[in-house]
Image 1 (cartoon, rainbow, N blue to C red):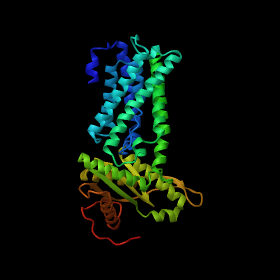
Image 2: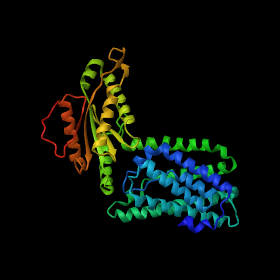
Image 3: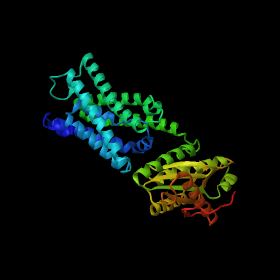
Image 4: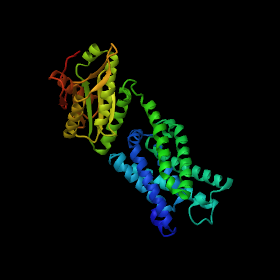
Length: 399
């Protein structure tokens, strides 16, 4: 609607199209580079999702007419829908989020028009001196306030029993958006005066995004010290939220559980430090054997779990075989208990596989069924994959 109603009111110049192309390309590269982080960050239900694409949206406020601002937002959210969420987010929530951003940039643009009613062209060219600084700060505050208040209102309305502090999100989110607005201003200044500096600015945004948010995510996710993977508690919480989402979307979710065969022999023969090196190597192999938005965790000891959104029974069988094969060719260079350099080979793994909702419709029974399938793989000869049944048979404790 914003695009249609303003398209005939604001002229779009050749330079506007050039700057639009720069911002759209940078926004898509940014999403591609950070989609693994964004997929995990967005999983939290009932809390605001702080969108680092605000960097490019606020730059558009300062550089582009409203029709192209709207087009940039639509392109960014569409790209995110397909590439970050693989069409598995809740559609009406994404449409609502995009709409709040359109309203936010429109409000910020109106603020700049109030400061500079006679400016014909990009506002960034007129933002000089203290007056320009005040105008940018006012536009940034209005941009954040409109977007934030609309999102918070929707969260409170849909989660009436949730504590307000959760609905408001962490205070650090406000600092992230403040940084995004500041970066957007810097990008607008340099892009208009020195468009060839855009690659440097894009690298800066990516470095700050990945360098700051990734450690924050790792800290929040309570990573396992030996492998760098998420621990069992955080993996379980994320898996529960993913199953709830899958229920709303009528979409499957796959779960793999992997156990290294004869891992005790590795510790006995080479020492525990070598065993830790094997665990790290296997963790890295698992991470690179699945998709960027699949969640790999350490379940305990030599056991690992993998959450695979959108995967059904035939697909999870193929994924499990690929993981098993990747472990079997692994070569781990390490040091044994005598200090001698050794290369550990011949590793094998047993895997259990199951899916929601075919195997079970809740996480606990799904994990029990997958664990039983793993048990059958271990006692059926190891180095194999077993699919979980809908009702796991009784089992006896094993060592």
